[in-house]
Image 1 (cartoon, one colour):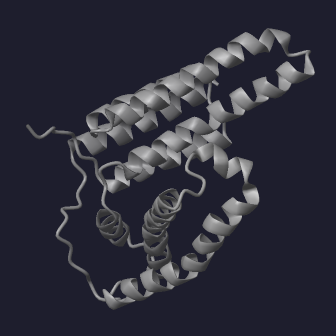
Image 2 (cartoon, rainbow, N blue to C red; image 1 turned 180 degrees about the vertical axis):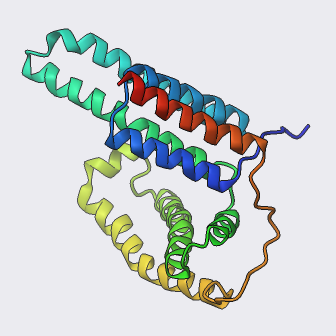
Length: 232
């Protein structure tokens, strides 16, 4: 049986990223932060990413617990350092969650269609298109290199990659850097061949329109921002 999930328009997901970035630059009260992370957790569940959402939500509460345990010992240098790490990572986590939620169940082609509908300049769309497609290709190259290394008995475990850093650089980093330039050129050429730079109106097989769940999400983000400013 195929699992069903609620789809969100890329533009409402982009609003989620912008709100998370706003929270990172202009801190809101801790209660609003908890509310926003909880909302993100439910958004993951609705969008078919329950496992990812559970992992992120668990990490958030572990960071909160670490801050709670270390804060009474803030006068100790070591405790203060680790407490800083817990708080800093907790502050960045909502932005990471929002970005992961935005990419979950959303194809690159849908993002391109949504950016065109927002009248984003083609000079920005093409680099973003190349960037979106570059990292998955890079990860695939990395997996291929690791499989070839394991097949030849080189750095079979992940620990060996850190034990032998020079060997890691020779067998992984150097090939990745050599293929990165060719990959970026190929992706740029593919984007241009597909007519992304054509200034005329483009068509898309994806239906890009705001639905009821998108309006509810945007309204909830606005409400969280207003409440946070009033409480703060």
